[in-house]
Image 1 (cartoon, helix red, strand yellow):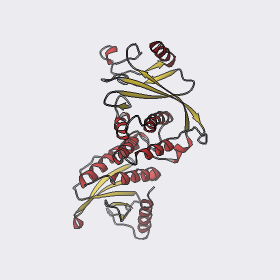
Image 2 (cartoon, rainbow, N blue to C red):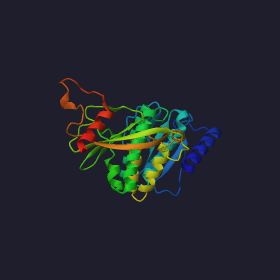
Image 3 (tube, rainbow, N blue to C red):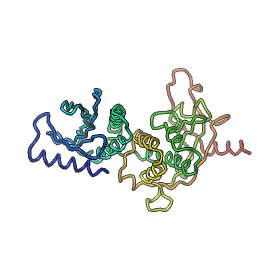
Image 4 (cartoon, rainbow, N blue to C red):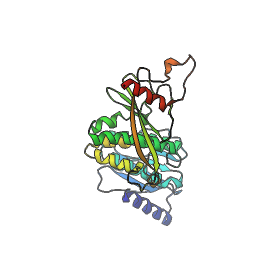
Amino acid sequence: MSDGLHEAWDSAISRQSQAPASAGGHYVFRTDKASRIGTFAGVDPEGSLLFAVETTQTPPYLDLRSDAIDYFRQERAELGSWLLFLRLKRRELRDVFARLCHDLIHSLTYASNDQEVTTAVVSRIRLWQQLFELRPGGILAPHEIKGLTAELLYILRHLESGSREAEEIVNAWLGPSGCDQDFVFSAESVEVKAVGPSSELVSISSLQQLQSDRPLSLSIWTLRQAAPTESAACTLNGLVLRIERFLHAAPSALAAFRERLLSAGYVHSSTYDTIAFEPIDEETFSVSGDFPRITETDVPPGVGNATYTLSLHWIRQLQRSTHG
């Protein structure tokens, strides 16, 4: 977490308490004077936290409708620049807001010009809006934590084995962006699922999930709920850290990975250190031929979507008979 961010907020809060800003005004302080891109933190007259990014490009108008954050622009004519402001309207979300601001500060280190700065800020704002709307407390639901754990384990397995380049696997991770499958490579698609040790069924969430225009595989990870102190246990925070170590040599892949995490609803939190799983097994099934599935072509006209479950026993038996 950036000390400069919290120091700027604390300085602004202190100044506001001593000499309240006038209506429409605010106090902001730079978070890092040595940074090439100006980022600022402060408070408005009502005490709401502010975060701002400086650019010489005129910022776009954004219709941001959220009860957690809002957005405004301020021209600094004397300096020939603009500030793009984000304001936190719910004080109880300060920790989540701080982690998001830190993530944005880091992502801006890869911006080479003001157009890229503005694009990065606008992209993050839209992701933050979704995050606050879907997860007001900033924490994933238990089933989402388990599913994301399996996807990160899949990424880590390929990075550790060297079977795929870092950029290839990160760019293929399209599930968080709303793609039908979790991973879409040039020559194949992969859907990743997480199940418990005693699970008999695996859930399929749409008619499109097992339908692809390229060869499709189903990667099923059996995960046991574990204590974080167990030697084989994995947590979201731990998996993210291990993956980022592989990606440090590839800055564009690291930036893309962090954006995918945000799209998936993940923001670093100590809560995730208390939830752990032990990977017991990973099975890969080819979704082709007689593999049981329901797709858009299998339902009558007028059926828009459907969810269903697959029998793990059945598809295991099918795989054994197929590979004889």
